[in-house]
Length: 184
Image (cartoon, rainbow, N blue to C red; front, side, top):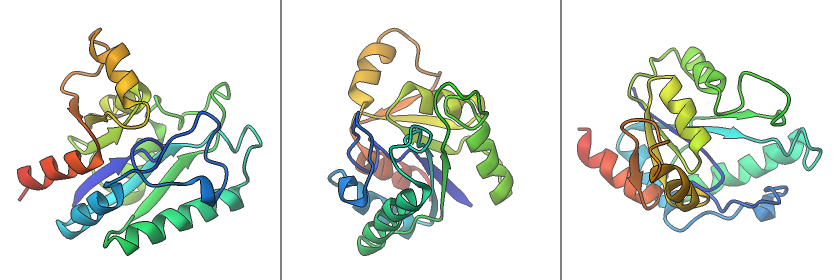
């Protein structure tokens, strides 16, 4: 199985410091839906792994998160792609859970539920915590410069804080292009 794990906010859709709280606030980034479509057609299984502390903060309900994800899945399907699974951490940053990135619990849960090894699986994110979770599971970290990615690059990429081997691309479309070209 060719598996790719994507963060959601800042990778697939616009990010917001005020959180994505409704389906109407979920706005895809240019080219991201088509990138998932290309990955799907090239045989990749696309899985989402996203911190969603807005639930713990009382900013949205599980039902609303489900509606946001339904909108995302439909938009991806309309672009010819498929999201095979969505994993998320509903906890706040101070709850000490094992699933909130940068901890690797969510990625390990993906591996267990899909019965796959995470060795060298590309994990695409826009924050240092996405990349740290990837490195902790021996995944291949990919930083996109969308969302908070440019700031992550400016603060962590220039200081050597990014995990070894981190690939950096402008956006999800550039990641998809690179992966499709490199894997038969």
